[in-house]
Length: 396
Image 1 (cartoon, helix red, strand yellow):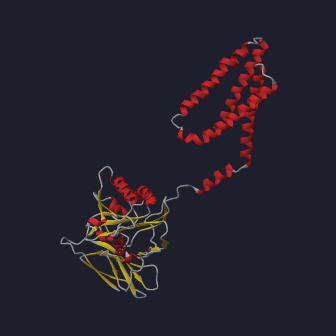
Image 2: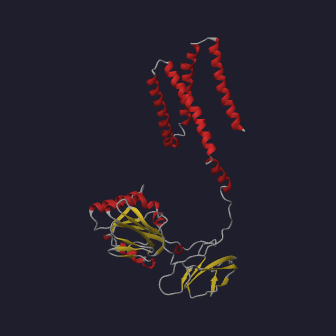
Image 3: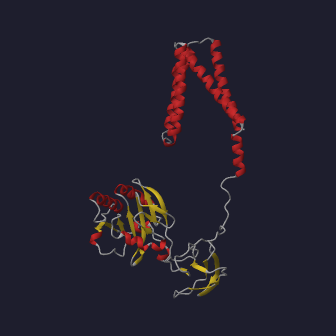
């Protein structure tokens, strides 16, 4: 097959490389050909093993050029992006449904006031952006009929979409088609039950890239979405009878290969170290070496303060449970308390200093004998020495 391309601008032709995809019978993936450095006229030879059904010029948009409006399938973004779309309401709808559609129009047009008309007030839709609202809108079936070439069919019992068929019960649909007379503008048809309208008003602005949507239930829940094929593109030609076959481009090699974000060997070494039983044993011994002496010391302080053994044990258990409650609270709330974390740590440090100054130091002064003072000083020095030794070991 020979494909003749021509640059039709009045200026000098650009020396560009133009790719072409040819879909043939009996093959799902299109054939790919490319002409290097085309001038004003260019002929591309494509060997076809079977009858060609479809030709796409620059299907992956590799050429730096301005796209024709017909190359871009209409989507919700086309209507949402229009400066002042018209909202067409179904005149035959019940009052509560009309109120729901009016609220949707007000929400989408905010802060401006929406342009709202009833379908009975129009003979035809304008050649501009518009929202057609409601199952009973007399312009809705006409929009669905425009999309028949995309595989859309609306019946009493269900809705046929390009990839599936949806039953009509509790169904809400959104279709976008080109406005008649202006290929750059689009018309959207939004249809659903009254209970689903508030949810559609809230959710549809988050689905702007799609050409059609299907929702189920009053919430509503999305059950179908997709984009139309650009069947009217001036750079697409169908060579067979019936609808155009789907374009499936062959896989292309990437322009460059990026290095992996993480070193697999290093990650494996870290995981192996974390799974090492020796590390778990060391962590257990560290926790026991800290927690057991602390609890014994707290118990001794309570006994020295005049509490009975039973009451001192109960208070010690309560203090341990408070640690567990604090750990759980930190797990769920720490991510949202980063700004308050320095203040909380300062309060915790101040509490420890207060206990040391107000309780521990006065108790040491009650026994001023030289031998007791030497024991206390030796224990304090031993604690400081242990901290220094652990710090030195971890540093190496």
